[in-house]
Image (cartoon, rainbow, N blue to C red; front, side, top):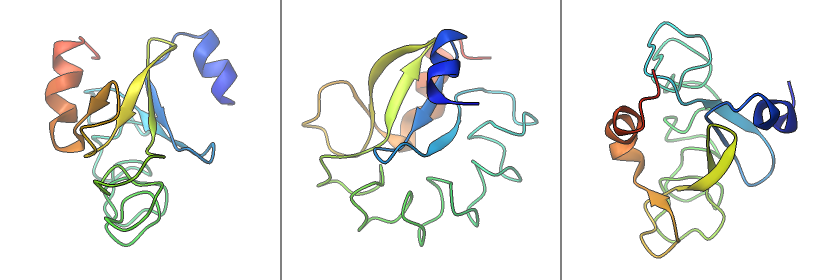
Length: 113
């Protein structure tokens, strides 16, 4: 499914600056697309498309596409119910930044069950 389709369906998700889908913002740890599913493609520390993989381009503290690089200007974009909300990033100078270490709390506040 394309990013446009997800926007049209009012989904909450993350997409990398290069267009790579990085998972659904869902508190359901059994959802295969949830970033909180530690066994899923988007929540595993071993997956190449997970922001939790410290050796991957989407999770490394050195990658410009990673939310874990505090100096990046190209972190993943957060879409909340189909609307661009801001960025998943440790860079506090980007408008609408959400710290990746606090994303679960942010999801709870925004009722993303």
